[in-house]
Every structure is written in C-alpha cells, then in structure tokens.
Amino acid sequence: MSASLPAPGTALKALDAIPDPGGAPADYAETPILIVRSGETVRAFINVCPHQGRPLCLPSGRTLVSEGRYLVCPFHGASFEIGTGACVGGPAGKSALKPVPVRVENGQVTAA
Image (cartoon, rainbow, N blue to C red; front, side):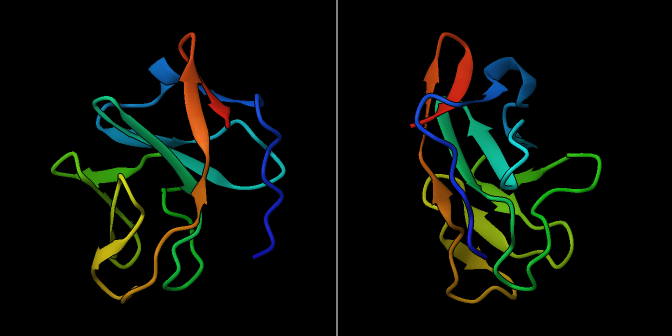
C-alpha cells in the first residue's frame, strides 16, 4: 500500500476519544490510520494487518488490545506489540505494522 501520510501538525484524534488501553481509527480520510494507546504510550500505524491486508479494527472502530501491550487483529488473531508494531504471534509471521509518527499536544494526537 502506498500511503499518503499526514503533514506534521495534522490533527488525527482527540486523546480522550481513544480508549486506554485500546485504539481508534484516526480522523484522517486520505489514509487509514489506527491510533493505539496504553497508559502514556500513544502510537499510530497504517490500519492494515500485514497478514491479509484487512483493517486492524472492527468496522465499528473497536480495537482489540490484550494485556494493555498487544494490538490484536480481529480477523485472524495476529498480535503486535503496541510500542513497536512488531508481530509477536499469529499468522503475520515476522511482519510488522507500518508506523505513523505522532505526538500528543494539548489533548490532541497529531502527526509528527
């Protein structure tokens, strides 16, 4: 997937709209981005599981997080470490999620 990343400073999601732990799709229409949160850790990834190219969240936007540390693909159970996007189990093998640089400013997650 050739993704158009948002320009630095682009607002992606209000921090309080992201469950902790959990995730939510970004409010950015050009590229599917999933923002995940666990405590003080906020990361974003292209919202595509490398196993079969399906979204990492359900159509409702609900995102599965295990133990506050792992993002779990709802379709086939591939698990990814929230801090790095590295696959730690399931059918995605050694594939990793594609990161999107973000920062938190004034309660808003923005592109970095």
